[in-house]
Image (cartoon, rainbow, N blue to C red; front, side):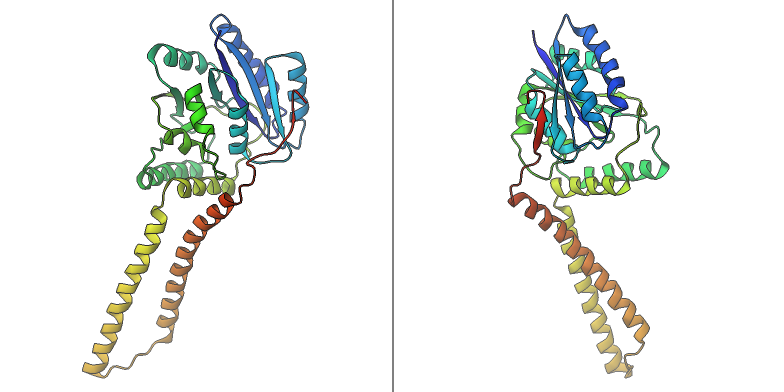
Length: 311
């Protein structure tokens, strides 16, 4: 019988784990005549009792496997570790807080087996529980990255998707250090079916994504899948050179024709600050790409495993 591997990244989710296990067990029971399951919990360096909860489940249920990192490496690393550890014919990634509804798995499996898709992905049609500011930033982020990137970025896309083994192997073959899974899922191609659902609020605990983590993640996505910011910095440089040339010509002509002396240090100071700010902005863009390159060429491991259910 074929098998589904469910990859569940966890960071300080001791409250959500029992509730998630209870819900996913219902789906496993409904599908037990069609397919078998393995649950792969990835403990991403949690500081609470997350690992203890996972160990208890692994002792009680042979379908439960787990990986525990030596420290917090981030959700992207946890997802990669789970994908590499999975042995199923199909693999799905899910959030443990039940914002990804387990009941969708049955329909996702049907679409792959009956309609021949390589991947069934989900996207939320609403942002319930998000602040107005976060909704606004998310909306414009997808508009921007969708415009400047050649890789398709679907607005509202979740990491929750069911993939065939062939697609999973393609994803884990890319060993880049700065990972942006939403982009990688799209980059590898394969036939993907999108299904929509109403965004669910987390069942327990609190979100681990603050504004700066989200901003850094968004910036990583832009630098990973577009070089447009580098082109933008070059265009801004050319534009300011052209403006400077025009201003110089105006000053020369005014001096020759009307003998108008150049004066006004406040306006000069404003111009210096403006040009200096633009230069720093463009240097910062280049610095972001240079920093990503620096991290890639060191070839450090994306994650380090401290413990599994076999150890």
